[in-house]
Length: 265
Length: 306
Image (cartoon, rainbow over all chains, first blue to last red; front, side):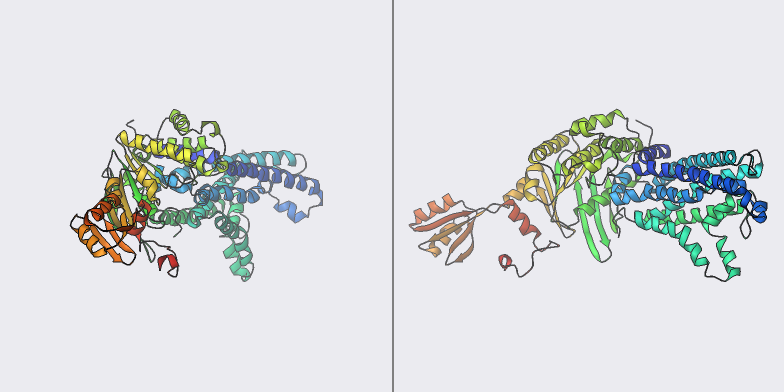
C-alpha cells in the first residue's frame, strides 16, 4: 500500500482504543447520570420550595445555570476519563506498544487529543442540553423558565458542554505529565476542590481576585447568561480556561517528547 | 538489517549500554545474549525509538525508527508480552494496532489464527496466562508482515510445546529472508535457536560469532592422573595437546580427546590411573565470557566462587 499513515489513522486507532475499555464507558455513564440526574434533582427541589424562597433569591434566580449545576459534579467524571486515557497506557505498559506503532509522538498526542476533545464535546453538549431542557420542563408553570432561543441562554448551555470537554483535556495533560492514574486524578481533584479552600484563608479583597481564576468559578461563569458577581464574563472565562489547558498541554507535550517511554526515569 | 552504531545509553549514573557497535543481518536468526540487566532490553528499546540514545544511534534499514512512515509494516517487535491494556480484548488490541498503520482488518484474524489464540480473541487480555500473552505479542509483531523482527526474551512463560513452536517459527522467518533478532539470558536456548550470537555484559560488547564458533570454544578438557606426569605432559605437548594445569590431582589437558590421551599414555608406557573427560557446557562458556559482567552476581563470600 502506498498511502502512509496519517493523523486520521492515529485518531481512528485511538478512538477504537478509547471505546473498547470499560473505564471510558463507565465514565460516560457517570457523566450522564450526574449532569442530568442531579439537574433533575436540583430543579425539582427548586420547584417544590419555590414559594418559600426569599425575595432576594427569587430576584437573582437563574433558571439556566441552576439546571446545569450537575455538570459541576460531572467534571470529576470527565477528569477521570481524560486522565485514564493516557495514564492507563503507562500503568499497563501499553504505551510502548502504542509508540512502536506510532513513533511520531507529537502525532500520537494530537490523535489522542482529537478523540478526547471530539467525544467529550459531543458528550458535554448532549448532557448539558438535556439537563437544560429537562430542567426548564420541570420549572414550567411554577418557576420562571429560560428559552434556548435567547442568545445568552444558548451560549451558556453550549459553554457548559465545552467546559466539560476542556476539563477532560486538562486532566489528560496532567496524566501525561504525571503518568500515574492516582497522581493525575488527585492533582485534578485538588485543583478543583482544594485550591478554592486555600483561597478562603486569603483576605477578602484577595480572595475575590484569586477565586475568579479558579477553574470551577470559570465554569460557573461559562454556564451563566449574566456574569455572577466577582467573576469573569462567559467569554473571558472561556479564554482563561483555554489558556490553562493549552499551557498544561504544552508542558506535557514537551516532557513527552523528551522523556524515554515508560521507563519512569 | 539493524545497525547499532557506537550506541551509549546512560540512566542517571548507570551506564546501561556502553559503546555497542554491531549489525544484525537478514536471513539468519541472531541471538542477543547477556545476563539479566546487561542492556539487551535497553538496546532494543532504543532501536524502536522508545528510549533516546545518549550517544550514537540505532537504525533499521538505514533509517531511524521514529522516521518510519508505517513502522509496524517494516519492524515487528515483542518487548513485554504483558504490556497490553488488561481490559481490552485481544482482537480489539490488534485492531487498534492495525488501524494505526493502515493494515487491513482481515489481517488481525490471520495472525490470531497463526499464533493459535482465535478461540480466546474476544476475551480480555487481563485474563490471559503469560504464554497466551506471549502469543498475542507475537501476533502483534507479525501484524504488519514486517521484514525485521525483534523479540525480547520470547520463550519466557512458554510451555515446552510453545518453545519448540517458537524455535521453528524463528527458523521459518529467517528462511524467508527476514531479519530475526532474539534476546535471551539463556545460552543453551540461544544455541538451539540462533545461527549468529552477539554476547554482551554490563552494556558492553563481549563477543560475537556463529553458534558453531562459540560451541568450539566450549570444547572440554581431559583430566589425566598417571604414573609419570612429566612424561605424559611431554607426550601431550608433542601431539599438539595443551597442558593447562599440572598438580597432584593430575593434568588438565585440552586439544585431545580422552581416547587420544589414553593411547598416548599406552604408547609411552605410562600407567593411567584416571582419565576423565571434562566437558564445559555452553552455559559455562557463557558464564566465563560474562564473568565480571554480571550486574547482580552472587556474593563474594560464596564458597563456590572462592
